[in-house]
Length: 428
Image 1 (cartoon, one colour):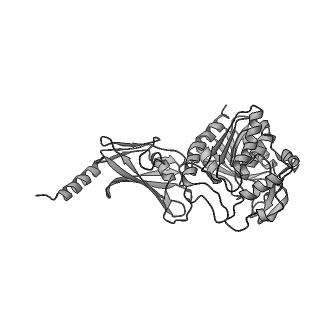
Image 2 (tube, helix red, strand yellow):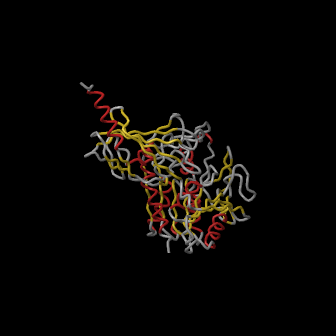
Image 3 (tube, rainbow, N blue to C red):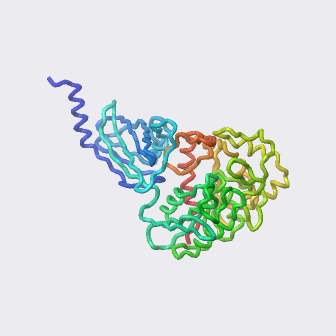
């Protein structure tokens, strides 16, 4: 008589061999995708999604799924188990690293490979792979290092005309290449503008976030609008953190700017800062210094031990500022000639972006402007792009960012399509 346990194993192996996986071969990192599995031999399975990031760290996430009539279809719908993920792409947002402290490093070059493994009761039933890229490899790039601005232009595939967007980095001083690549994959010509550089690699760029010329954004916008591959008379602007502040200022002051997306930005201009210290000057200049909210003189409000939580110091500075200073520093966002999308993390530990962007929202509301202010209570300052692992975002070695893994996952899933939709308004 055959061993029943071996019979079950043999049956499962035979059934696993006939399992059929259906899914796209390649996707962009910001795109959910449908995975269908047929001829599944059991009524419930575990799905494990895994990848190795650009730094060589392995990330994995597992959840349980019911199977109906041998078929499992994973797409945008809710799943069983934790209920925190939707499909494979969103499951990856909940992935944890092999190195407990690692932060996800996005793919470079040819992208990354996602492995999807199906098992039941500890027995592997089958697996498949999907290649994921950060942008469309069919596009092209162009470096610009002129006496007016510095940046990298990302073009979508094809030779037709498309709207243009400027992507603005934050206070880390690193150009927003990832955002630019993703926006280009959605059919935009995107300039990842470099507006200051701590390392002093470009002669025209400030070495600190002080008196950064608005002229950089103006020159970049004019250059884009003169490009024969760009359509329309205005560009969109996306910015995060200090880049969000710069984006709102550029939109308010430049006729060449249309819709603006500000992620954890500020509706007031702040005092600038140099490495390791504040500077009694504005962050931005427009022929002359732009009025700003000064930092509190009381050094006791500043956290000076890494990882530093800066929100209390910014909030104290705002409370202590005179109303006259606040009024002068408030960005006239009602002058923006286009829709405005504000995205704020309710647990932002760098500054209170809900309040600071609420200043912009209030002005837009009073003037009857088209805008939306999305507040994600459990997200912090490190909101980026959807469908990437969100573990270990709460702090870096240098700063406390706030937020939770599930909070970031939701914020990025929901805000990013709205950002794309906002810039779609530029199409002629």
